[in-house]
Length: 429
Image (cartoon, rainbow, N blue to C red):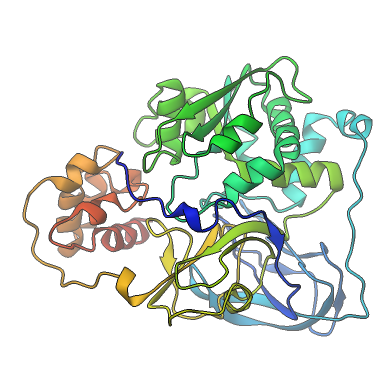
């Protein structure tokens, strides 16, 4: 892990505010790791209400998708997608005559009466996924095949520029802790850790408390971590907090741990206490070329063009627009791509902030090996990819790569290592 420039000063002091209600949303049927939702429960012309389920999958691991505004289904077709390029989505046009649904708060007694299976079912039906970027359906992680003893709430937010999680921790501390209590109850863990990097003193102060609601038998401890990248990656976080190493090919539950992002814990709170599906999220819209960067609560399916317009005007034309952070985010080809469940930020970079250089031959300098948090040899994987030797890439541990980008960041030859790794994973799978 290394220390890199944070650039969080643009938004770290800005309170979360609601993005304007969009006139139209495009809700992709694939917003999670697993099977795309292929059973569509609405048709063109149907009136839908906020929070109404739109689609599920007929089998496999999936997360249902829900309407994020009240309106009418305009079309069901292929639209731009921030990860897949294009994917089927449900376009909904807002109808002012249809009121937006509200989700009243349940009492503590109503929530405490729910058993573990009922809690899991609500979380599954709410369509909650890992909101730190992985987008793995949350109810699956809350059903580990073997007992675990520890839960880690991931509040590291180590990506440069992004501050949405930090603001959530500051502004929604009680709700997040109630979400943590629900997670602890489901997993029946002995230990609950809140992991926060030391560049977030306000969030750290908020979480300095000895117990969590709903899980009196769980020991609560805050872990203050050094600000380094990629501290927030699941396996790195587990080692930083518990000094447990997740072996190659294994998952956190194999070492007795489950990790969830703070935004996921907040979504769990909303699902259980309000029966509110995941149809909106908090994200950061930022960049020095924006006049008014912000932390926004955004409806899923909102085109990022609307967010850029809201946070404008632009001081300069963007050279690159990234969904997520600069290290692990994906550059976008269009401003028509919508916000999805795993969108943690929208970053706009000007021409003077984007380095363009020719890719050169590998120098065998070892910088990528030295900086790889997973102990891999990115240079060897890159060589295997260039020769299309997918078996060698697999043997070299490409599936263990977390795609943090440090290899490319530190490469003096400007090798496009991460792109090759993504390609290899696709071929192998």
